[in-house]
Length: 246
Length: 308
Image 1 (spheres, each protein chain N blue to C red):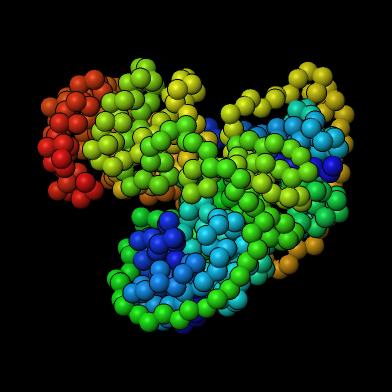
Image 2 (cartoon, rainbow over the protein chains, first blue to last red; image 1 turned 60 degrees about the vertical axis):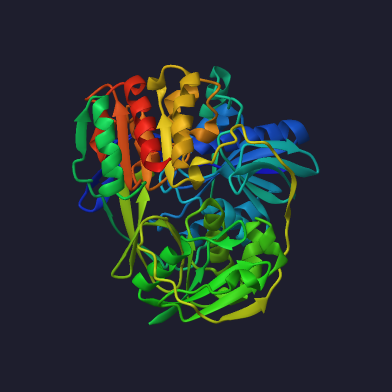
């Protein structure tokens, strides 16, 4: 079984995001694996343990992204692959998914796991978009998976949890599940230091999305503050008369 | 003016009210929208229409009774052959937007909160910044709800088109929810508790108020991590659910950046906290400095008097 797990390097979710000259300035943030990708790595490793095979951690990014691949190696994946071309800068969904789809086809993957969304864009486009590009089904927001010839995946349907069956190949995007993800151990970290990252190129169509600017979200006007529970009646009245929300 | 497609947001097989907002977004982009209603029976589309919509098409396919985004994209393929596509930024429709875009080789821009001069703005870094992009040619666009003012309804005639798609994901079993209450991702009003609630059994006080308001009960990450009784499905925040209800009531929640990320775009925020310095107050429209033990009984009494 060739299993691919997508990982992405993102600013730590506790990082302060600074905007300078209409661009986010990420020069002093700490970088981590996108949190939901950790659940995807766990699913991929469990799939390997259940069915055998090999787990490839795949990312798209410049050499700075080697660190998150090595973090994945320290947790237990087998191979590390990075896609990059020095001419790339901001890539739209067409570019990202084209590059990933080419590489995943080359790797002969039968299943792809990824986080349900990345902590930077939060768009949740890559999993389903990549699946469409590959002509595969996808299940989004999986919390548990049972591995067999087909996958039995627990994921929400219209907000209610359901067990879903899907044949392979498929793309599964992972939410936080009721299990602990494994963390790097000392041996894993030592092995990861020696691991090599295979860098692949991919060709992408002309980009049609242009990044225009970043900005801070508009500050809300200062709210009203009240003291003591006797003010609750007042607030309830304001919710009706001023805010019109109840 | 370019043409566009608005795909109606469906809820339990009916056209959801948020569809009016999608029409407004398509108009704000300077396009003339066709409204496509995905349904299993054309009567669902009877009487549907909005000011500014050029035509209404009921797209009838059995695949729409499933949730499989791949099947939906296949069935909607021909009706979305030209023009930008507008859908709601619900979990299912974001999948659909991504799949339709990939199918057509056009980009997808998710979670749009503003359209100005043909440019799309979406929150990034969990709402710590906004990102504005421009698109050459068509794109699939998902629109956050509760932001655009909905277009006015208009009665229109509807064309019916039969399509088909293949379902590749089968529902084997619907499971019981850890929590039988309305899910935070579906609620117009949410009341959430944090670790300041002291004890998970005290969430019953939040549930009582939620029942009066028809609200969902949420929780902060601190509460979910601390108490096994509070399931992750209730968690609002960066590693939980992102919500933007009309009203968000935060009780005993200090307002950690990762919680704010999940709820700051709510239309109105009420914070109840005993610590006047809690960061949540900087984001609250109405802040009440009080213990929850004092404030919640009052809240329950006055809401019942008003709504009961």
